[in-house]
Image (cartoon, rainbow, N blue to C red; front, side):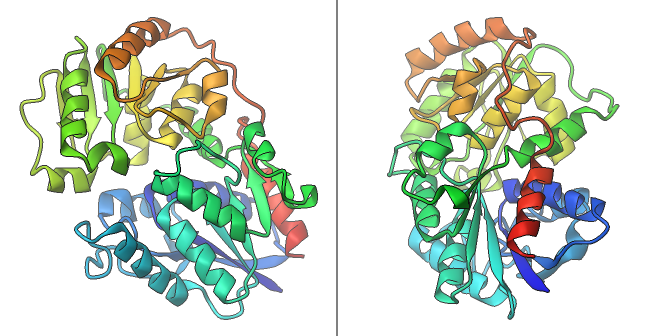
Length: 358
């Protein structure tokens, strides 16, 4: 029986892995063995362990580094040192006898695992392959290009990805849709009391290009704090550390990182979401909440086409203009969901994995 390794390192990886695990459990028998390997890239419990616990996937994590292994992942390290440490970890968590590695998305753990697997002569399967924003200064875009160069099989989530993979064999490109949407739709179906009331927006910021430049970061914060709406801001742990906490933010209300369910409940009842996250752009579209992306480009082109996302960049005037446009769409729920965003992406993905690993 062949063996598949699924590599997890960051918050969005846990969500994607959860969708696959649920589909694995739904099937009585799989033609392959599998395990989850954790790099510990997100070493704060609020971004890692709590997600593994919530989605009940901890029992399948067979190889991992401690979640709080600060000795190997340090926010003060350079990006190159952080990546090299993840390559070291990937070498340790890929089990002997592994026949294929599935990497999820575009995080550093995924590119580290792809590079390591290739050196081990292990085939690489890339879920969320082919997405491009065109900005090679972004670490995530660099990772996408590198992983797709190394990968053998390509699992794509939207049509734009196919055109970016035209140099690859069509037999190796598999349209499956977005498995994060599977998890989101299940969460939205739950009868959970509202924890957040009133008129408010939500802000998330974590991209290096936005938070590693203090002048740009505080310009964004100042602009958003004057939008005449309460903005709830779950702050990434490394941003709290970098800026020694957050205070005096006008209409912005900072809070600690939220668990998956709390974050979804926060967003689903919001008037608007401002973010630099690719995953949150998709989640906003599915929930019918208007989204403003604080970047000049996006790899999630389907969210633009659906009418639910406005690329505002980081210019204060553009952000204010986008806010005035998009906040008027709150509650409209007319965004057109793209193909493959139907809650069945995990099924399609596992169907293909069964054929590849039979």
